[in-house]
Length: 438
Image (cartoon, rainbow, N blue to C red; front, side, top):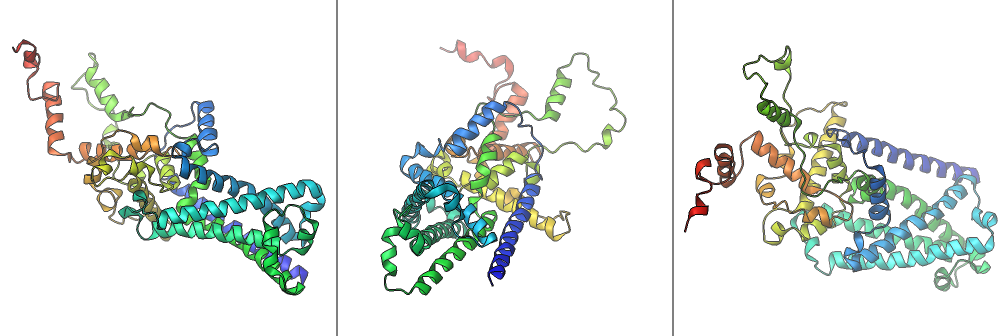
């Protein structure tokens, strides 16, 4: 019977980890659908960014209250999961608290006691988060894009964490040997009296049930991540490492346009020269982005990393003045479209079949794109260095250069720049007339 339990545990463990690995492969494939971009330079600066922002949570504390609570949950999540190692070893070999004999009473007690305190703090922090999301009516959680699944997803994760922390403490509270030892039970010792009067068999059954639900819950949580905004738990690290290190506001040049301009500026170039053999058969690169496959892989990684916290939207001047733009929605739409493309590939045996949809218009409207002031407030505010502005600018570039679909005022300005060398409706000879005006 003991072996059957161990075998069932091993099967559950393999199934849980195997499904997780399968989803991670899908995630990696979807991100690689993006165009290539080189982010392997300035390694020490990138590593520092990752350590400060992802590991050190330095941007979270810019909003101290929620930032402090998030650090409690984050630290608790990482440290308490060390205890999962013991559960896994116990489950495979049929042992019970195997680390107690290895680490000794004092150190083991210190570790489990620390876990218990963190579990209690995480539980309190998660309850406050739930109240902020569902009771406090904080504006950034009430936006249109946060209705339905995004709101439920946030709540599901909070319920998960409440249940897992409770099970951990109940598991310890209903372990008579552990409680009698009196080590590492600063919180569970106050829960133990709730089970006074229960028979030894019943208490053992509660302890085993809590133990099983706890580990199975962790495996379910692990696999839920792929379908949730909580992928940032894993992706915040690569996202901060590969983030754009150039000064904010510095845009990239299109290689094809740069080459064209260089050719125009070259005094030795022959304007009547025939193109090289085979050059006319080359399909010119698309200007800008109208779908997710036109974006680069870091932008797609950004979309999967988005925490939907809404700090970007709450600091966006366009959104604050009632415009339709929400940088958070830009990232959520990009991820949703990328997921749709991924499912299309899965359904069609690894090949994308045109579905007559694209990110532009089907998910993100030109009105949203042109509402952006390109101030970079969203980029500055993001706690994990996501760059919604880069997606907005690439899609604007497509509208202007592929569809000539810029707003009338902008088209007029660009025509003036082209014809007059300035944004105004004066020819070049009259540009300095204003200096002579009285």
